[in-house]
Image (cartoon, rainbow, N blue to C red):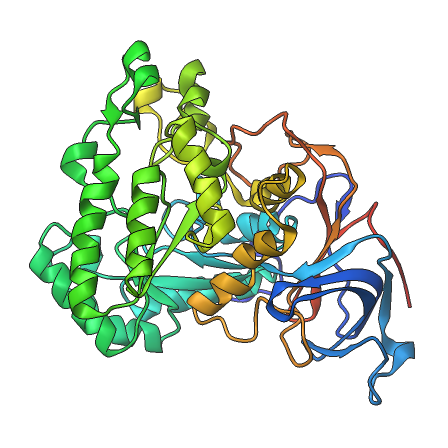
Length: 462
């Protein structure tokens, strides 16, 4: 049985603060001066001052009457962007159960260092997140870490075995923002239909990553010319589209709200586009790495390109980009899966799938903006407002009076390279080492508390 760790008055999860970074300042009142404030929810893009008190945004432009300027910590943010904190709706933090890979403390530090203020974790923890007790444990560990907000996605079936339904209503009442079976399939379509009927009754969001286990069995790469040449067992696109088509047929009959997670193919995008045109309550997400990498990147047999679903063709990648730009795909996720180094040292098919993606989520999406493939408004919308609305994260994902002060300050002109010195995650499994980026998070606030500040960032005073 999981028990909450005792509060001994010490840091239960010591984490490193690499050179150039230091913890935030413990202050409840802030004045962020002169930043370019960008909020897609309110079509806001202007340079102004933002006032924070008691965890909320209490003023913009002029100081509110009750704001005591002398007690505020002031930040000179001229030339920088102030955006709503990024919301990542699919990130594995490895705790509980796999603390040898990472912990909530290490990964929430990596999150806030990258402008992410809210993390939704899937239910494939150990023990499985199919009881309120596990959800409360995770929430408690996140509170002790004191960095990003962590919310749980509860299990669709008990133990994720696809045999008996979990107590979905109880899980959502206990704080879970959605229900999912993670990457474990529900083979019994009758059970899946009953689960969606139940979810529709209580208006519960169900997150599903479509993959047919028989078609994907033993596969580790996209079924195509690269996998054939390398002798890798392939995963066809039909492994994604076949279960997706079945699911859409059930949605049409049940009316359940479904979020299709981690799309990887052009054919799947077409199915989502058709479902939306028919008015089905379907939304979708894509990982940031699927927007940049393709099967060509597996050519080196580097284990850091072994992901699930696999990196597909360049045509698939370009279709995902276009679908994100036109709104067919609603959100971008990190699909964060930190691993210990040994997990990626075996031959490619034997490596564990997944990459460490928290710290490249925002930079990769903004890189699409730099390349003219995405507008800045759409990019931030896919990372802030849209996931907040879909997952019921009220008062998040926006910059307005009375909203929760979850904010990220971004320097849009800092050139930096992802390497061992800049990566905060306990997992070093990223294919983006050596990539150059132009946008860097310099400070992050969660509930009005500064949880990250870069020493070479904005000038602060009181």
